Every structure is written in C-alpha cells, then in structure tokens.
Image 1: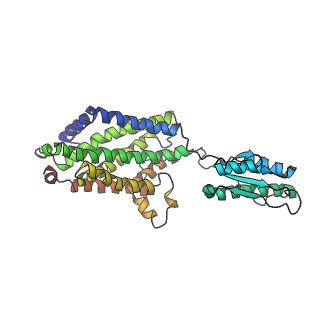
Image 2: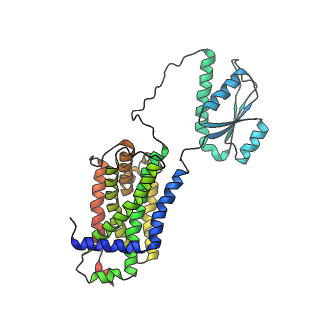
Length: 362
C-alpha cells in the first residue's frame, strides 16, 4: 500500500516530533487539561433562582409553593419582598413571584406579580410556561376536573443520555481538526524556514510521497492524543460509545486524513509563521460556529444550513455523534459518509495540486 520511501520519511518525521520535548509535553498535556475541564463541569444548566413571597398564607398558596419547589427548573427561596428584591438587584435571584393576599379559592383570585432581572430576560418564557402549568394543575384540583388528554412519554432509545454524551463527540471532532491542521500546516512553514524542504527538493521524492509521509506520521500522533481523551472520557466521565470503538477510530482516521491534507494546503499557501495563523483561523473559526458543535445546525437560518451541513467539520462531527450516541456503524452509506469521501478526494487533490517544490525551494 505504501512505498518504502514513504514509510522511511514518515519515520523521520516521527523522530523529529518526539525529539522536540517541548512540543511532546504540551501535545500530551492539552488532552489532559481538556478532559479534566469536563470532569469538573458537567455541562448541565443551573436551575433558575426563584424567590417566592407568600402574602396569602393560605392552603392554596401553600399548595402552589410546594408544586414550584418540586420542579427541578427552579431553586426556590422564600422570604419577604424587600429582602428578595435586594437579592434580585444584586444578581442573587433571577426572578421573584409575589403571591397576593387575594390568592384563594374565590372566583377572582387576583394576579401574581413577576419581578425579573432584565439581564435574565431570556428566561421569561421558561418561567411563565412552568408557572402556567402549575396554576393549571391547581385549578383542575380545585374544580375536580380531569385533563382531557394525557401525554405519555416513551423513550425509544431506552437509555439515558447526558449533555456530556452529546457534547463530547463534537468536541473530539473539533480537536481532531485543530490538531491535524496545526500538525501539518504549521510544520510545512517550519520545514520551509529550517531549509528541510530545500534539501528534500534535490531528492527523488515526489510531492505525493512527501504528503503521504507527513500524513502518516501526524495521523499516528493525533490518534495517540485523542486516545488519551477517549480513555479518560470512558474511565472518568463514564461516556458510553454505543457504536463501538472500532467505528469511532475508523472515522478518526478518515477525519485526520481530511484535515491533515487541508492543513498541508493552508501551510503551502502561507509564506511565514506570522501568515499561517490568520489563514488557519479563517478556516477553523467559522466551522466552530456553523458545524453544530455546541448547538444544532437546525437552529441556524435556512439559507446557511446547506452550507453548514457541507463543511468538513460538520460531516465528521455528525458522523461521530451517530456512532457514539446512536450506535451507527462506520460502514453505513449515507449523506455524511458521501460527504467524507468527497472531502477526502478534494483535500488530497488541493494538497498535491498547490504544493510546488520549486516555489518553496526558492
């Protein structure tokens, strides 16, 4: 599959990397810091801090307060209006509900007041919906009315999924992109600065052999780095890879091939260490926003969604979530796999097409 010069040159690139002790330490330290950051931050949203002022002090208001306390959406604090208002202004409370004295079983029970911190106004909808459901439950209990419709939830996956289970595959895909582009693009500029490319130019090595060699070397390094994260995620964060590690690592290899070739292309465009950084940032930063790493692509405007789905990080991240969360296989032929195959062809073509020995040797 690989020629002897390609394997020999790949071994040389590995030796160059492992002799650079500073790069070796930081390349292994970064996955550890990344994993422990997730270990101490579970990613679950904090409950809404809700203050309750009970001016009625009757059976109905007590029943309402108990229902609010049972809702995990809220962290309830009872007290006087003046004290809770001070906490709201200081940012210690998100909202305050004032239950009026007329809150009773009469036909007209008065209106509750909702005091809000303007900086938390985005949570008004969630607060109002939850309180409306509680008031409706109390009203049905008072009037002895059974609900006409009952919604029964059935989990078709039959397994719990935490936020970290959803987030981690996308973050691994993003790290894969960064590690590969940094390992190939920045290395090309460094090899040019140190004169390595000039010396390789006088050898029989072709651009294709050079690209394959550096891709093999960096792919092995990236797999080791991501293996540390995956091992710690499974051992410490209890993340379950439903589709199996074989499919996951197969996808990592395909993704590494794409991003290493793209990094090689970006490094060929840049002439100095100063110019490679903005070029790489111009490629990676939009993908962090539009590839559905932290929020679904469906939340983007309809005009942008087709472009977002076609990004290389999008197809890798989506396929990685399908394997890790939904139990999919690497060998399932779907739109994501077609996108991966297409990006492999495109990235290898542009990496070899735009790499010109003579221009770099000058």
